[in-house]
Image (cartoon, rainbow, N blue to C red; front, side, top):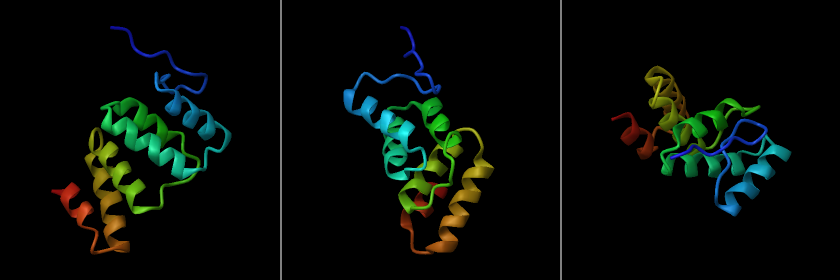
Length: 106
């Protein structure tokens, strides 16, 4: 089974036309975390951890919403548990009532 070929920016090409459209939108506005976050959560759900890491690495600015930070911590936990703990700690400092962060930490 062959791997998807990368697009010019290193992200694997997706078969879904909607995902391809979102990737094009992200290339036009890389600081757009709404689009990046959707693609990040889609990659996580698909088990495409390499693509998820590439989305985080290519981000010109850090994630700021709870959902994006939770997704970031989930990706970080795959290879760098200390980074995931730092991300969850920062999130819990902002919102001690974030149940999802506690669940992810466990």
